[in-house]
Image (cartoon, rainbow, N blue to C red; front, side, top):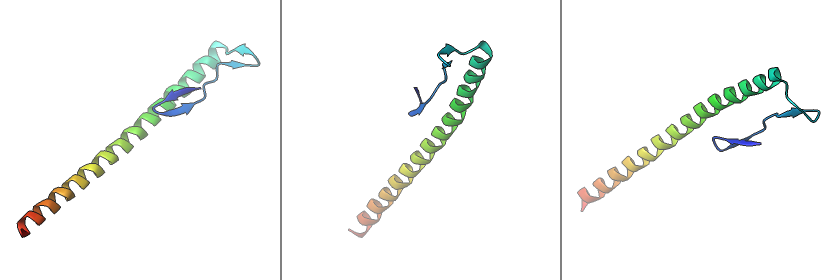
Length: 72
């Protein structure tokens, strides 16, 4: 097991109590890299959406304060 961008990922390191062949090890490494790229993109997208939502909420708060101060 390893953690990749806050997600647990299983990594194959042996078959039948024997280390992976160089071919299988390369294939597993390729799978991990592919998973890493897709997870990173998904994580970046989620973070971007969260930041946009926070900024929108801040702007709404500023507008509310401005509206209240105009009425006082």
